[in-house]
Length: 354
Image (tube, rainbow, N blue to C red; front, side, top):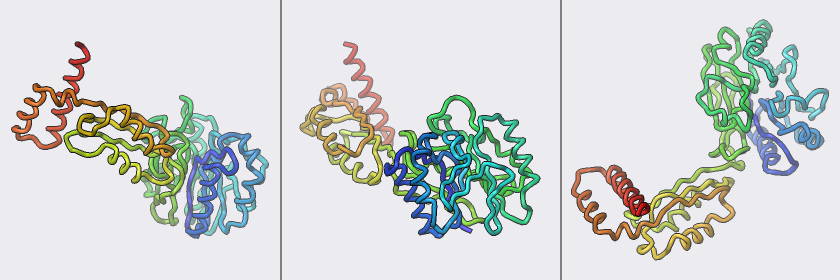
């Protein structure tokens, strides 16, 4: 049995990038011949979005050839009661009503604003109902406390804990997979004591600018480990460039090459650091920034031009003497660069204080 697992799409408007991402996932499900499409919470951004989009959701959640199993998340926990989302859709809101398909039973613990004691109580309740002769899969929307990620990696949330869970709470519970939602940043897998897996797929589209890099979903065969499936969806990509006047590289061509390497569906968060020699490249800082902006126009979500022109320092006799002595030292290139940069910064600071 093959399952596609995602979470945190945060639908808002029909036809926008998030909507197109959902359609892409449906198409991937058909291509990969999955049997279940599991959404571990926050399909919608807000209740009003679900109300507006439900007629369109019914169209794409019907006649796909696979089941779509959903649990509510903290953004859409009050959306699903007595609502019809399409003939393929099954919403898990009751621990007494799991989803069953062949030799797999899928359980859902939807989001509630509860503390750890309540989570333990729910897990204890499920424990007595799990099928010993089937693969048990738990859909869960909450915060795994075993991770070392920042709270900001779980979306733009408040300071409260969201459905806090520890892997130790699952000890002795016959669950082979926990398909998580709520953690946005990246694909992350943890091994359970029984040999099973807890997996966060990350959001399939960048919801905030903190979610950088190509997005992924989890597509796996039951009985095998979770597997990251890269997506060609909208996302943010961090690009850091450091100019080095000692390498004789054209800064304009350097930025152009870096932008050409960026994913075509990425909005780049560009940071340009380092130093330039304006005399050598025949461009002052304002002209160089203008030329770089022509290259990046329409491709960047953010631009941070932090480089500095140091041509006056490079012409300083004291600095030239330092470079000559540095070349005589038996340091590797990285060490020499560190010493050059430290000296340049010290001389710039000294000149500023005069």
